[in-house]
Length: 287
Image 1 (tube, rainbow, N blue to C red):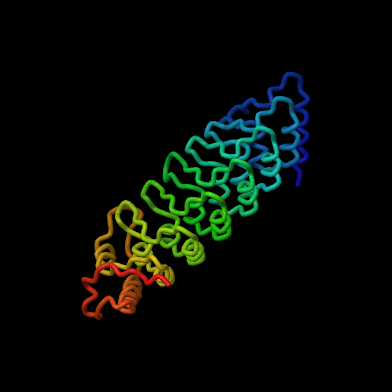
Image 2 (cartoon, rainbow, N blue to C red):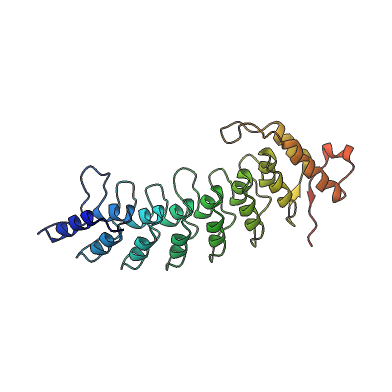
């Protein structure tokens, strides 16, 4: 629905002699009329501003956020479509922390906007933020369990499914830790997935799933042809987790998860129940 008052005001400003259309609005953290219109989903105003002589479609606020960045974050599909069609649009314009429009859309599960961005010429599907967690769009989508978005990103040409953040967490580690079975299944089916990738503390997706008590995820991970199960190592990790806010306390059902792993090792001929305390790595058979 068009905000008639906002539209009329913008039209009046554009008609004002000498108005600088790209000037930052005072006391708004450097927002321009375009960034505010895009953030609030004012499609008609965005269209009006795009027709203004000298408009800078990539003008950013003090955080480096462009109109496209805000439109993507808020899921304003019509606004994003207008901006993507604008001459000179920078589809990968990073904020001061290095986050791109695709990153914001992926985090917030705006499937339609993600589709538009993935179809845009020159889109960088693996753009990594430069501050904080240094996550890619796929890492954000996986960490929040955005199944539909993960599916779209996995189908994107050139996607790096094993990209890591500063802690070397992969998308699979994020999904396993949070217990998002649907995302775990999607990632396990992706060509080239590294199911044994370890983070900076040596924990894999399997260790995280067991620590968090994600029994269904543990079972799914055991179906991966390349999975390596080292019961003794996982037990040591669960008993002595690294210190830090990420770890906290183990789930109440970690024993059930370990039992699943022990049964898996036994099914692969890894030893008797009494010998499992010191059993080494067991790899799943490749079908």
